[in-house]
Image 1 (tube, helix red, strand yellow):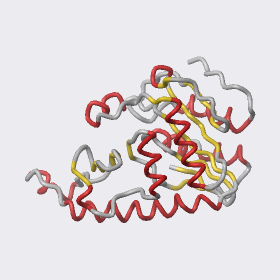
Image 2 (spheres, helix red, strand yellow):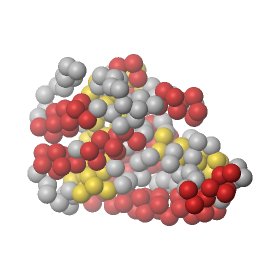
Image 3 (cartoon, helix red, strand yellow):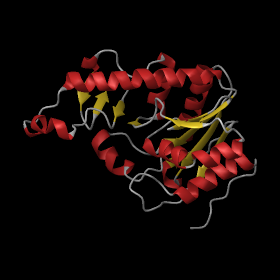
Length: 238
């Protein structure tokens, strides 16, 4: 999810659903802190996918966010795009009206691809439109607890390297053709190296008990700290 206004936007850049979920949860707080009453919740291209920063870099460099050829996708934990090592985690899922297909062990891939391509064509256009905003803040996190379980299914480790995150920030700046801002939220044991890049602020979160949504209290601290002042963040005591 994102919150997008006439002049500013706060947007998820992955690596999974939690970044967008917490932007949505704190949309009113973000709009108030930015002083922009035009900000509204909107979906974006990096919502509900799982991919490494290196994969996100390649998507940005190719300026493509879904495959134009349905044969590029395989049915694996949703839909898997091998070329970019991206999982569309919530796509190619069966609905109740397709229960017969489920019982037969089949998925109507033509229908599923039409839904995916239509959705991501719209989201891609919205993501490209962000270039017109004066201020862009992108949120990256790997604090979704079930990423550890999903890593077994996908082979994508939840551990991030600071250097890879910095390369993603560089690629996003190049894509948007302007210096953007970046928030990185991680667990201590899911980050290697120390981020040194300008316009990238790191927040070390404490592990919570949620399956995937994250702790709204800690995320309130993230957004409140980031948009209220430049002081070095110190994690709140749980």
